[in-house]
Amino acid sequence: MDKPTIIGIAGGSGSGKTSVTRKIMESLEGHSIVLIEQDYYYKDQSHKTFEERLETNYDHPFAFDNDLLIEHIQQLMNRETIDIPTYDYANHTRSSETIRVEPKEVIIIEGIFALENEELRNLMDVKLYVDTDSDIRILRRLSRDIKERGRSMESVIEQYLSVVRPMHLQFIEPTKRFSDIIIPEGGENIVAIDIITTKIRSLVNE
Image (cartoon, rainbow, N blue to C red; front, top):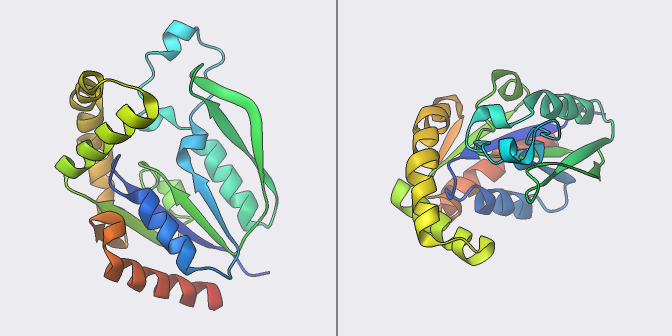
């Protein structure tokens, strides 16, 4: 069987990566697609005390187990089934549960650091960066964290200023230069998504 088409989608928190990913997947209906979310690959911290786990900076590349992610992508490329780890956010470590994933025609890797690791990038056929203004991203993050995670506005803003923003500028924004296509304004950019999905269909159908 032919090698699967691998797509990387990166961008800052609240940039609209999920919307772009969803629209690409919808446009490729009829093809077999699997979404690999980088957030599943936070490092196991079971060897640390709970207090130590609370200090984890989830907006730093070191928080991710890229070695395992790369190993799994290579296995999918070889048409092997994998078991994706899951993360227990309450206990700040990896869960004992896994998700069985079968090989597919298209593999989408989505996450803030999807383009940060060179070895992972080199596996990708198409590299996308979703570029959205910082004021839009912080408003989306505020809305999400308050509504879905029960956090206060003050705590979200404090975390954004002390951790999220500096990590974005240091580690995420620079990965834009590795992308094949930059998508301004995320899922709202229908023209860019149409162009991208046309290219992806041509790769899948080769």
